[in-house]
Length: 415
Image 1 (cartoon, one colour):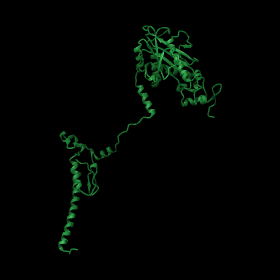
Image 2: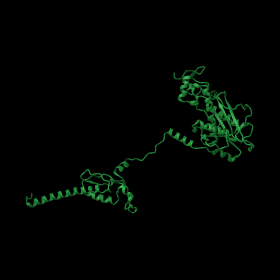
Image 3: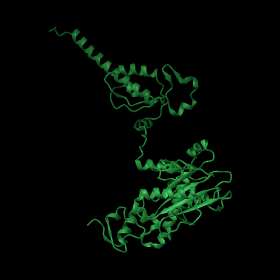
Image 4: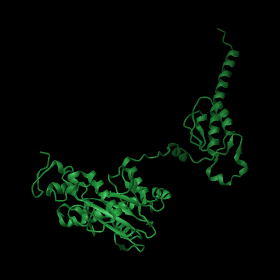
């Protein structure tokens, strides 16, 4: 050990004094920096909560400065402040409008606008909105709405056929009533040369009054020829719904091509109008002249056409056998072709009218509300009152039930 002397004591005291002075300078420097930030409005400032702090690269964003973090060395403050102050200019959002265009160019890019710290934190929490995936039901309903926006369907396939044979008459064929558990199945065959605004798939025409208006326009259009075939519930139970539908389509098309001239023609019963008071299967047909007035079914559809030749576009994936003319099937054709859509409207309106008449004859089943379709209300009425004469006994749940002579329920099939 060195001997204690006044020189050693002096040097030791001087070293302590210099260390204290250096520590005081560090504290003073931090306080001065904090005071500068708090008084200069160009900086977004959060009061320092620690004795020392520094700015990191992750703390300087395009939105401005974030709160300062803790560190021991004040030298980093000066170094990092000098580094980032040359790259970014943090300005008050209130003063952005007064700045000139010449001040917006900097060494590392354009001026970065900042907002208050409150806006910075709120923007940081915002997440990009994800596109919501539609469910199957929503997608179908959206598709139906898009279809409904189409005023009138085109004649794409019809025009392509008439390019090769200009004189050919293209008819559309569609049905209504395959799904219900009561009432007939109805098919319509339509030739309509006039473009009628609003003719589209009948399923997208949700208002019954709208369908009625289009029905009248189609039936009264110039040179129109149309036929509607009705197949009752008894016939459906005998040959099944698919064969009954194909039979109705064939009967309707035959009425247009063969030109029936008597009440009984080609094995078909020709009636003046469809009605719930008519039993069995029958066909209603009408031909119009140039003014839309009904004429004899033996007259030609257009005096300018010498030999009438027909071509049928059938909605669905199959063509009925023994069709009276050349035919082709178009899947979902009622939403693609004008003539098929016109046929779907005539078939739908005719069947709805028949079901309204049946509702008067059989009021217990409330047929006007559900048109014979298998709704919860309809099932409840069947279990309560049994089956009416127009119910399809081959359809579930009726085929699992046992009925009496007058249609009353003997067994519901669950016991």
